Image 1 (spheres, rainbow, N blue to C red):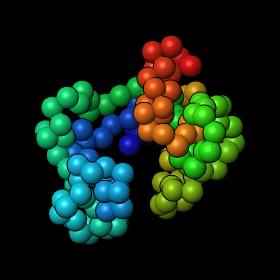
Image 2 (spheres, rainbow, N blue to C red):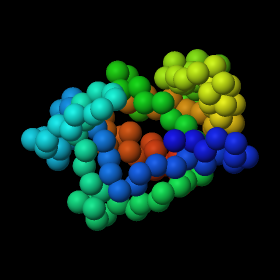
Image 3 (cartoon, rainbow, N blue to C red):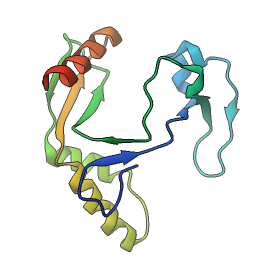
Length: 141
């Protein structure tokens, strides 16, 4: 969640729990067989405490330097390419809901978030994708 009415690109969240859609078990064998949690609002989820993953570095808030759209359907070698700001804006606005007053605040927050560097990661091999992301964080590209 992005902090509204803030001048920096800071996101916050619950670092003590991850939530996956049931279909994620196809990608992450670690969560196969875990109980599906019915949600009052929203889709059923598998909730997983991060305490079970002691190798993770957790933070309740983080500064956003990059936004990376994942394109897992890529047939070629992995590529990290610029993501057009107008395309990113359109994609992000598709998931924002609320009253007209709330939308004004959320759109302003999205605009601030869109000042980060935007990329699309095109890949079909998870290890190669991880290497691309590690290079981005280490070298800024």
